[in-house]
Image (cartoon, rainbow, N blue to C red; front, side):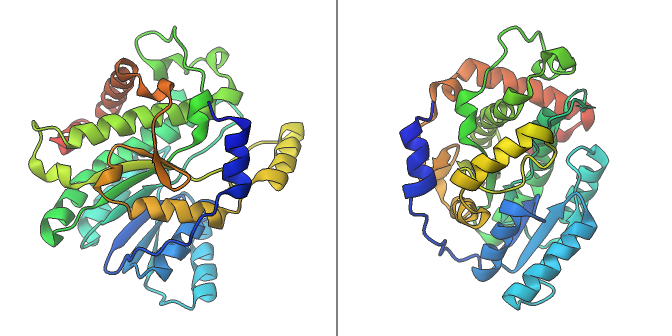
Length: 330
């Protein structure tokens, strides 16, 4: 569990250098790119020479507005940013996006899975609670559909594509339900099983389990050797001003905003860590980055049996939503 001294160090003492790795000729997809961490990440990618940045966001109009702001601020070419609608709550939207990317983009070098929610009202999506639906099911539904395009990019251009998940150190304080039945996602279809103080933390723990298994799978000798050319990693961007609790109201929102104002880093500072991780090499494959370095997983994330269960359950969900999708990993 992160200690108070660790939190104090990462929030106030840690020096986060500006990213310097080149993204020349690269095409990067950033989900949730129209605000906060995602928007600041896009700015860095453009400064570092990216050929194209795909602005994947739920609201196309907000994405276009953010694009105009970035273009004005950086005085960059108007064809660098391509705004595309992507709603991680909608299988149809995810499939349209993936099909567009496969058809229209010459290459996909980096996928940054930044989009996520911290819901505070109960709603069922993908037959589970909405936070888990977006942060886990929707995110991996997109990721697995992007694998073939990224394999082709590796093969054609002789490079190593990267899939980066924006995680959270809060995974370490997640409470994992021991009595969740056959399907942990189905368990959270019942509102009585949901604790919104824990749900975001749990979603980030499940995301790490799935990321670890995905990384191991693309390295498996039973899969096509081309898949191992993709690096899969995750990072904690520190506690930043990102708008993640935009759905919160009342006293909880007021108290969070006070805490955020006192302790949070800027979204720009957090985005430096995102870009550093997205530019990292094989040494980060299947690993979790924190404070700019690879960090050992906390014991809760190192549970192999639980990780296998979560991955298998997630795969069944993805296959039920889009039959045949898991063939992308073979």
